[in-house]
Length: 120
Length: 116
Image (cartoon, rainbow over all chains, first blue to last red; front, side, top):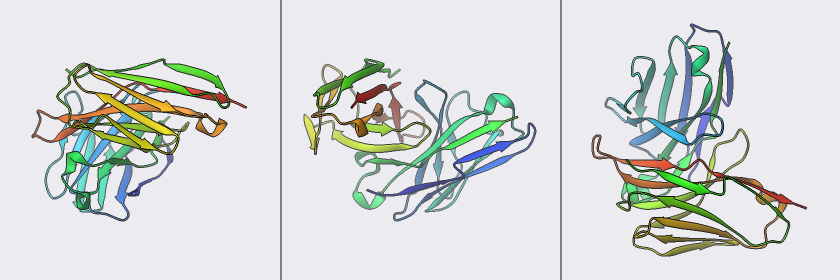
């Protein structure tokens, strides 16, 4: 299947600093990527939909000024957690679909390895 | 609002046993349903994708069924192995009201332990 690479896999940062997480589709192009957040023993929750060349669409309750998303190319989307707080500590995962396989919503979603963010 | 429920939350079986994981969803207006595997601290690995028009999909020892009208899916694992130990997630893909795009809604998963 298609490969989505996420970096870094683990990051520890101080409260008040910003952290950038990268999500790359390695062998396919993705006009749309998705960012999820997962708390322990909870479901993955969609945070935002990242659209190449345009603004991201955020889910209700997700602060767009805190979670900045940039999708500058067909293979790269970034999530920046700004002014991080300990409550932002979580597991963040991105996903994308391979447009070359047909209609977006009809194809498999492939996920990155995830990023464990710890804010101290 | 779509809700996805997975039962049981955890399951422990001896090696070699056949087992069934259950997934139910409240809104049958879905594009497809996808089963994933997640190892501790890792991302998701796609196992099977079933389109809304399909009844089942098979891959190796895995078989997933879908009954869209009743809002149910099952993942059948044959001849389980210790390497199958992981959390299994099901997710339904549905039209997202915001921007008309699609959205995956996940269950909380079933944590499977296969004992040697």
